[in-house]
Image 1: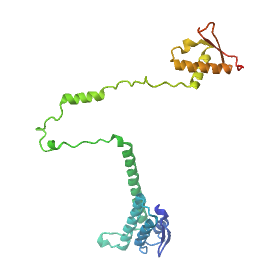
Image 2: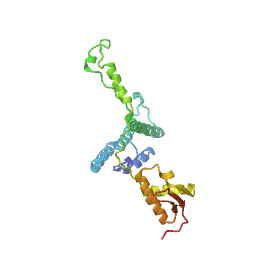
Image 3: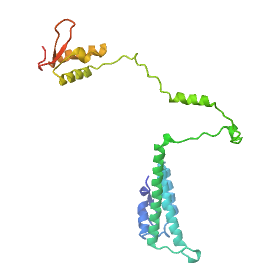
Image 4: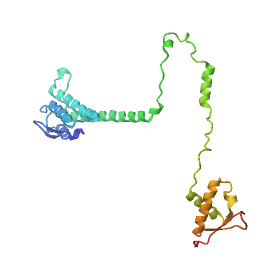
Length: 245
């Protein structure tokens, strides 16, 4: 709930809280006639009704009430012998605005600090406390806890690159759409090519799917092929664009 949404019903004023501030600063309502305690009670009652407490809004309300209380106290005690000079209306307006600007500056600064803390949470440095036996003796009398060679070997293991993962047991997957694209790309570069020269280095599964893709393109009239003898080399050529019957 924003402070401006707080509705008040007082003896000298009825309306939202931000309007009350405006009329007080314009001297349409005197601070001496305004019971600020009733404003605080109304705010607390509203919090109990809604069951919600926004710390940022509550802090803003406390800053405003504190500033109004200080201004009212100066108006009630304008005696020079106490070292308190009477405040003019324009001075009261300037001081209240200065308080609000200062509160806003600190609020924005706290937001920046929170954002920076969250952004760098993973890089915070945490130092471990000294062992109990070292805290009871001087630094000169401290003994080595770990063997330097053992510590160096542990650090060396962390710096050693891990072995390459063996993925030979994983069955490769071949997409028919990708093989169609590979055939079309090969025919785009040149009008014909030898199948073994283009795809002979692929594994058997990839070659088999490529043959299925070749049949699909032949059915659409995109390619044709030549083979002079059984099990001989296959020459793939561009088709005439007429689908096969």
